[in-house]
Length: 96
Image 1: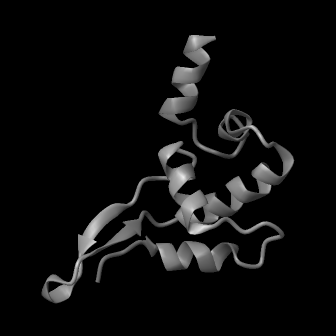
Image 2 (image 1 turned 90 degrees about the vertical axis):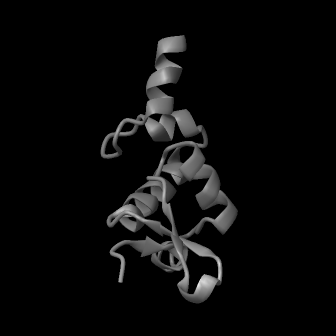
């Protein structure tokens, strides 16, 4: 079995927060590089694929959720201490 966290693991890790993210929000935050990208894994017997996120993604997602409660601006969240600097945040700072 692959090591990592499924989208279901991410949802479960945040379901008790005051403002848990939707699956769509998780996808947007992945595209914004606030959480690591997952990788597509094939299901057995050709039944499609599923996404597997690196270990620790659920912990980082919880941190993003808590920061998002404090800062509505995703750039502010991206630059928050405790989150790894993302390429998109670094590109945004170079533009300023």
